[in-house]
Amino acid sequence: MVLESLLNPFSIKKKPWEMFLAGIIFTFISLIVSYFVFRQSAGLLTIFLVVLATVPILYTTVKNEEELDLKSDKEWTLLKEHTKVLIFLMFLFLGITFALTIAYIFMPLEIVNSIFSIQQQAILNVNNNVHGIITGNVARFDLFGGILFNNLKVLFFCLIFSLLYGTGAMFILTWNASVIATAMGNLVKSNVAQSTALTGAVTASHYLGAATFSFFRYMTHGLLEIAAYFVAGLAGGIISIALIKHDLKDDRVLVDSLDLILISLGLLVVAGIVEVYVTPLMYA
Image (cartoon, rainbow, N blue to C red; front, side, top):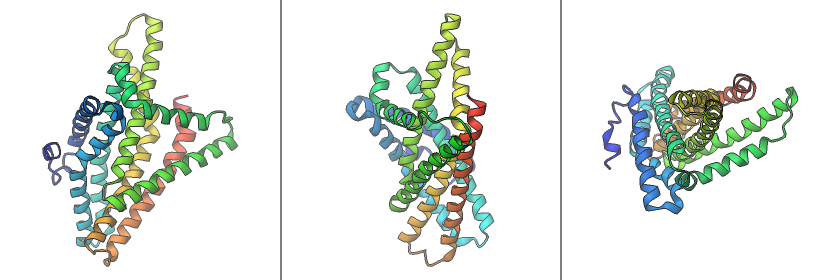
């Protein structure tokens, strides 16, 4: 109960940047505990401990959003309040991703392989699935369909996990953060190695340039995807709490949740378009 007590759920909307710092703190503590206590299962345990630290804050926040549904008759007002929640959730995600990326880049190789081996295998599987796709409008459309289908599956599980567990989507999103951090870490290490081979020395500017490139390479479309998952998770969490409190008889809860689901679907389509047609042009 110590970690989550560091933040006040009722003031987070006003200071969303605090969630970035919270994500960093939660993640580094989870990394240390998982590696030194349960080294053989450090990868998944790190994710579990991060989620465990965030659950009280997220549950209180989702509960407050469900209560707002019952108090307000204006859907636009509700959506503006939900946007504030989305912003601090995105800061939390970025904090977790930042901490995991730093750990991946600078920790000894033995520890990295112990903690991130599952994520490395997940990235390898994804790369194998898209390997051999020929460039062109037809191929790109097929790629877009495949990416959108996979993202819709993740969105569906975020919705179901939140519906069943209230804040269950956080587990999937933290897992995604660890995979993105692994991909970004690999790209940073690769770019730094190339720069070092050319100049013969490693400088802070090499790391800064590589980190900036990797961030925009994955986050240009990634932020839209994560926002979609959080919106769907928020919708599922609101329905979950409404079921517990027997508030589903009020149509406002269902209407608001349906609007959030539709918004998440729209964000996911846009994210897919950006990933297939925009990101490759900018970061080929």
